[in-house]
Image (cartoon, rainbow, N blue to C red; front, side, top):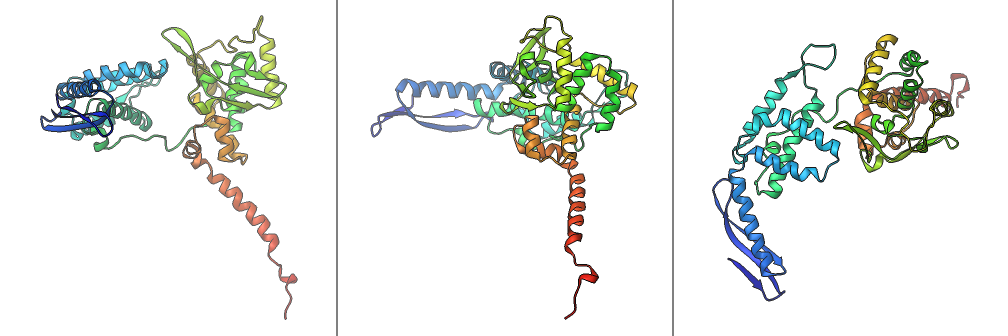
Length: 375
């Protein structure tokens, strides 16, 4: 085995030839091993992976990738990834050797996705194209698998990166309700204390749906007028699952106005035998969405998603003149760029308000004709 010792620093090096995924003979060298055994093990492992990458199919690579992801991702994130890849990626790529997948083949798959349609769940049965954000998500999943092959199985490059992306990270426009639209909607649930409280919290705090469903009585400090966001709720395989929030920045304390404290207190008082660690809202994401759509139809307001209530809160704060930094902290965004990229298009109204204010004060600084004096 071509390993040798460097007497100057008492370490071992490995230098050898291998056949890459294209069938070309190449040389590999790595230095700094503490023992001869480590150097030999590196060579053996490298050659094994290089040989495997030559004939490995995408389906085989997918299995290795998901095995690695299983121990690194939250269960819900893992399941979402698995669902997308099995449904939208494996049917096209599964039996192809990864060494044969070129940017042209990636492009062909992308074009299929761009022209594909789906039938939305519910009463609307008209086929629709996939949204730009969904297309971006699918593309990212494929790219992540090839990045894994580049890093661990010596694939020389990621064909998805060479091909270019598809879709958009964020929608050009977001849907939201104005305060008047929300007031019109919430009257539908004035006699339903559960969903009245749920929708009031979602609109007036901007918290995520999973964050709301994980709330317990202990998370509220109604004297201090705050609610602590420290966890998120999901349901997986018929089991309730309490996990960490989306990101570290999602862990936050949100201030809530007195009227909302009263609503929450009244709701808690109505629950018999409520304990501090009990989940406050024993319902599901599907049920909340169903009530949102039913209520919006009865109220005569446009149909939105549950997540759009979060956008509605942000829009309301922007209209009040609050800065992106304040909104970032309240919503629990990872960085200010997320806030700006999501809500920048809502700020033109603030520019108009700024212009009106400048005009108002600017007029006062301009001398009137009768104030002018002649030399």
